[in-house]
Image (cartoon, rainbow, N blue to C red):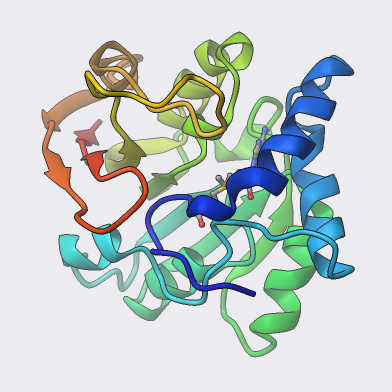
Length: 225
Ligand SMILES: C[S@@+](CC[C@H](N)C(=O)[O-])C[C@H]1O[C@@H](n2cnc3c(N)ncnc32)[C@H](O)[C@@H]1O
């Protein structure tokens, strides 16, 4: 596996784009995640975001002690951020639509306290609604085509419990944006603002520069219910 910068796709995004294009052409906007992870496991593709280190932006935020609090990691992949959040003391649930990604997470972290679950953000367990004190959405919505983003954003907001926090880490659109041939498809300010629904309010909207990464303009807004 190559070691791209941990917060954004590397120049090795070609495999992801190839799998995404085939999946989208077949009318299945999320099927490519499983085919990409499976091909990677077979040594036939590179998953550009699959790096060992937790997100540098997440670490820079300095999460408070999570003892007694519940966290949900959306689109956790093989678990890099879930393991970090659990290490901060949160009772952590992490889910992904890809069964292979969840298998990899369990295999790589055999003694993990994290509960890894195969689940679809667009059809999540009912019990997760308003169920978590901390929700992390990192780099997932930007990998979804516009046709399903409008449903994905409020689904994520709906996981936050009363008094809870949502952290979003995402690439930001810029004037010199990519050629549009994602994934990823960076988020606009309107898309960032759209997380503030159903009683969730935006408490900060920081845009940071992740120098040295493929998509250096980054959003890192925080929301509370
Ligand atoms: C670009 S990757 C980011 C992975 C991880 N958040 C990270 O930053 O390393 C997007 C992840 O979201 C997952 N995903 C995509 N659509 C999903 C859905 N509808 N429900 C749950 N997970 C999904 C993919 O399988 C993939 O692991």
